[in-house]
Length: 312
Image (cartoon, rainbow, N blue to C red; front, side):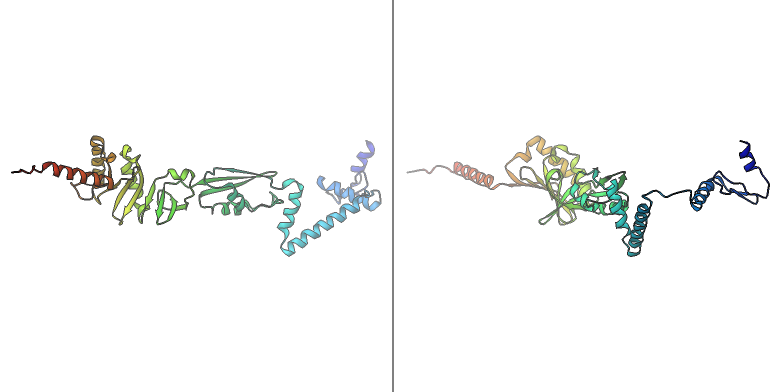
């Protein structure tokens, strides 16, 4: 212990040395502790006391080759691909994808927008760019893409809310309440949506459907809401009857229609249409069969009223 104390506390002109003889102080300046180990290592290398391990040359060659490849990729603009390839083969390749929140959006369409291949690395994957691609799908209102290390992608989407189907000629589309078109009609659960027909129907449809919905027994029988001439509505019922509503006073006409059906089973009769376009006047259009039956009844009634001929 006395030798160690003399080594550190000798003459002020001599620099302090470590156990390997490397100076730790120079003219009163003492090396920081974190630099002493590298200095000691360099001193041992200079003195020939330290021999490199057998694999050192191989390790240095590999490091040089890797750095050369990285530099070449950077210069050539292929550094991202190089990083992707290396990290994917070291356990960071995407092999699990979790999709949450999709009902109408196909998982296949979402996977296609992620633009993955068999060796896509989670480290180099651009989640924000993938989110922007997923957000372009028709049903997607909002999307989030999150990387869960070491090898999972999580995709969460919020879909647009369908309100009705809108038919223009032969084209049927799913629309939102504000009238924006979401996507073409594809069947399935979308068939349960109310059907709006005609130009201007998406704009005026929500308000009109709210009025009809106040009369539940009638609303349950409506199969189509037809906008006529950008002015008024027709109702297509489940039994084929068409109700022609007036341009004004729609709520009063609906209430009268429901009352007559409840009291006189109006909508269960053998009729084709109920015309309510003229206030205070309702016209019924009979089916062809009903017309024939009525004509036959009138004819029979006319014959019965004739007086028998008197013979002399």
